[in-house]
Image (cartoon, rainbow, N blue to C red; front, top):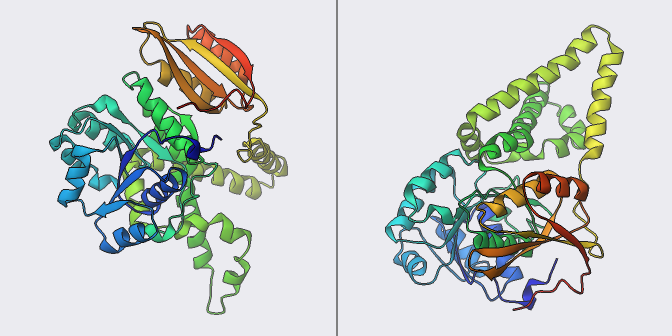
Length: 388
């Protein structure tokens, strides 16, 4: 990862609406990586605003209704990050529309159905909205659970589409990778179903396990002591905010309910094998799960000595950034940086620098099958430096 202190932040003035665990962590991470960036924090809690200012996570802070917030958005803001519960989204989008804000808007909300619809209907420049979702969190809620390194090595989903302005996606990508995360592109229509399986359903399963333990506890607390090891780690997320997770579940109700039904069927299969004394089927399910778990990507430690540049002409083709980055994510390739070289009016080259992860052969094949002309070239870290 390049050192962000070597160059100016791509967004000079950022408004973070909602200083909960994710919003405050984002503000803190940006201020740590880009001390010269102006971060304006917005939150309904006076205590939260005070803490954010005291810790230097925000340059200024105000309540949503304060004139200072409106003035900041109208006069200098070039990125708005919405980090509120879904229920508060509409009010903030209406404010941005009333103030004729036409800068970049993103969010960190874990469900997309409502905000996609609201942004399209409300924002004066809906093509400047790029949905986002960092796959991070804490069992602690609010600013008390926030920390500057929250996003180090985590996947941060961005959902560009054919209307996304390539340069704006490039800027967001640079900002997010600059605070230590890795960007994964995902089609907007696939987001909620995918996140239900890897985040929302697991939270409900963890809560279910705690309920199971609680039903078998007694006054001696013996089972609680036994649960202090692996069980405690497995169910850590169950300690999260009930209000927050209830909202998330109902915002994504169909996908979560379907996932829970599927999870129930899987658990029932284990129970059925036990009752039928079918050791072979039981062992096969365990083996399949073990193999899949072992195949999960390891922690993000890309080799910076093996960089690869991919160059793709962007001639008379809309949605290139969304299509290319989604293909790269689908084959496990990590994009370290993005550059757009404008050769002439209407003609440009999209340049991606990849780390040594993923299936480059599949990437090449899928890009060619999608109609792109592609060239690959090795790149050394010394060659890959940021130039102001």
